[in-house]
Length: 264
Image (cartoon, rainbow, N blue to C red; front, side, top):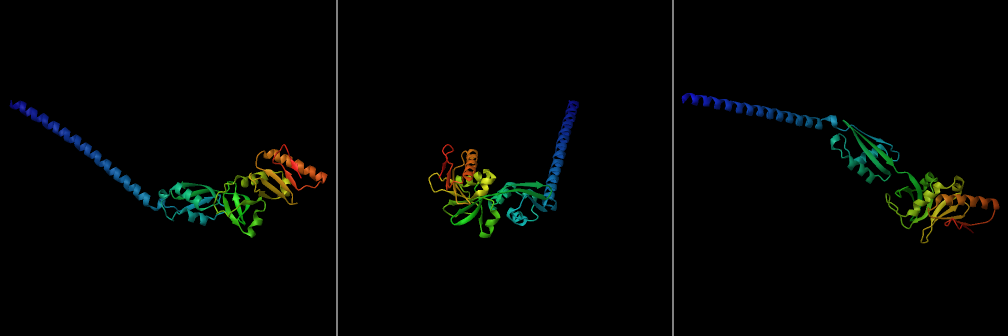
């Protein structure tokens, strides 16, 4: 009986040792995992807050209208900002919102400490006269600039659209009147010889807001809208050539209906 009890105690002691050993191994493993995890956190925090990731330069590409100083100021990125703290989308949207001439922006983070921002600037498309003032408008109808008298000559190659609006638009406003932009679209597709004869465009006050082109000789070309541009351009070129050869007097060419051209 005593022998059996000793044997049982020996087995029990062995089991306790094995359980303790397993628990100790688990403890060691957990301990080292905690140490490694803490080391990773410390390392990340060290690098995150070190000068290694502090922005040293912001480079802009394709900017012509705005200087780099203006663009840098509008990004709102302070010198020494950690590159991980830069909100790409927020910076891009802020630039577009605050700078009218910017059409799109793309920010790239070049690790460890550089920022490159590529911009696409709006291109002047037409000049308009609205509310007694001259404005520069791009191909999407965005009002870019109110032109001073001294600036008008710089954009003389752009068609001037009179009677565009009855009010003075705000800079950055998008013009919703379709025929205003159509004036520029039509003008760009005109034959070069015809284009050289055009002085300006006018939006008629009628219900259709027809597009009229006034020539340097005081003639009126009623274009209507931008439907059938190719056909109208071809017809207009032929009509002007015939009138020039016949030397007949006329004041108006109406090509709104390509099947019924009116000359008077």
